[in-house]
Image (cartoon, rainbow, N blue to C red; front, side, top):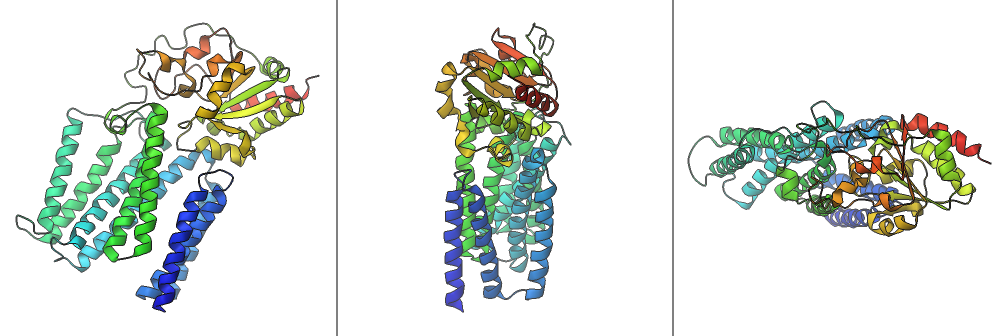
Length: 460
């Protein structure tokens, strides 16, 4: 039996690695996710057989209950709320790891300054920070609290002192120095860790939520890995390390996509519109068009590049957008989709959104692949995107200077579908809207896209 359990753990670890590898491409991501889910199921079964802590009745109850909750959430949660759902998943992952570490401490309160003791504190600290931090990120994304940075004087210094206080309490808990009841000290340590999670996320603005989501995902993996060390479970160590490492890599890619450092994201208080002078935003004249005019612009050209943004997700108009693309292709127009790495509210948000509408994967191009093509593109259709196409990124005086953008302003014609001229999360005006080559198509994206489908169908 011990050999079977160890082989099951090995198979589970292999499936985690293969599943993660297949997540690299939208074409194989679904299978990769299924492999990772199978790996976790095998790991749970092997752990139950190994420890024999619970009987199979409770395990089956947990599997059924969790399956019902997960399946219901997967079916009912809309794509616009997917970032919030990921935030909740991160919170639960971090919270579960923290509970494992806490339970181990309560079972062995006199663990002392050993490797196990240090690992317990690390698992508790990282898991607790992930738990509360992820719920704050969820609240910001859901609009339950403001998406603007919430700051106060000397905030970074206060957070640093709080972190040092938590570390000191942890050392006292393990008996490194000082005296006191270990359980009482540990409970205070847990409280400081929970507070620290809140304070680390509230100063981060809505513009940086994709980075926060991926960073907290990394934290949840690190917490799981620490929990694996606490209970001596190899497959939990491996899977947690994979999630932690991939989350950190993704975080760096997100930072690169905004030309920002991780420190600037975490401590810069960037994003939102608080304190922004909006008096001149939208005051310049623009050229606008209706659905008939936009259809004429799109239907008689050789190439069109579509740039989706969060507005597309909000309006749930991805299916109508695919219909427009299909109709244009029937007319011989070459249609491509340009995806900015931080478009939307989480990494890969636009890819998932378009995949839901059955847009072919080979039509999706990232920033590096598509940017050189804009100069030879007849029309660019921007749907609900703002900061990621703002030419102000090339202005040395702009707050988004150096941010990699999709160079849509270099196309022969630009059509922007948007509700209004309101700024994006960076809180600044977009010069693209006022260019001579730009047409603004105002309105709700879903309704406007439905009108556009009808008009393109009626083209001669």
